[in-house]
Image 1 (cartoon, rainbow, N blue to C red):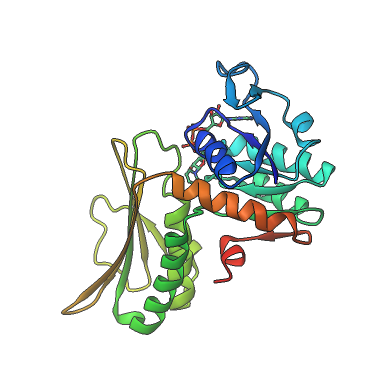
Image 2: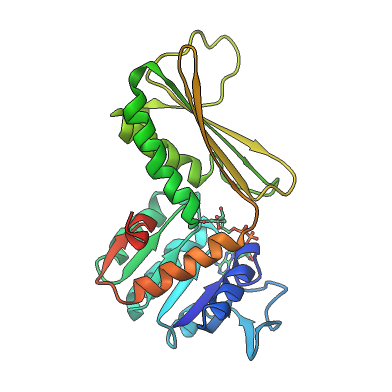
Length: 257
Ligand code: NAD
């Protein structure tokens, strides 16, 4: 498996390079945005960080993107041109990047996941089932905690958990979601799904789905203690994507959940 890693000097990019090598793959290119201080530095044995993403793709089977929302659309367009599979973990994507992913999915296999950990993908399946079983008498809230440098809120994983809760309850997350509460907000309506973001320190990522009933409550929590779980999951997705027909896939497809 020959893998290009954009964002190679970022927190996730470095982990992905380690995970590619640990899985027996090769780093076909380590790329950063033009002008980045890491350009020219060693990224892996015999591989230096460069700034030519499309050039690096020419010798690759797949690329793994943990960069920034404004970079993701251009990356997937370049990969679709060259027939290289894509694995996208960048979160906070806007409508333009999402549209670019959908267009690329007609030409290449694209795996997009707000969270590549096995545990979180299991949690999404569990909370959907819990919301279905517990029913409308239980109030649904999600609280997520991340390190102080995270740019987007709520996290992509919190949104995925919110979507799973909404599916289980038969709600539309777009109208049911409630971000934080402040001031005279009145009593809580039954059809809300609260999404709350806490930021600080070096927290890798924690998510709890609460099901508040009368006389009891259920909590389902996932805590990531190392980014290596995301990198290992992304590499697993990359190996899977190489053999797939064109389409936009999720981690549930990769894991067969
Ligand atoms: P980071 O800021 O440490 O790294 C991002 C890197 O991308 C930086 O080195 C930056 O220079 C680089 N970059 C930006 N634009 C680029 C471009 N055009 N070309 C090449 N490189 C470019 O951030 P991080 O903690 O590594 O997270 C990156 C993204 O991954 C965020 O959106 C984060 O939310 C997401 N993330 C997703 C998962 C998951 O499982 N899906 C897990 C962790 C983080």
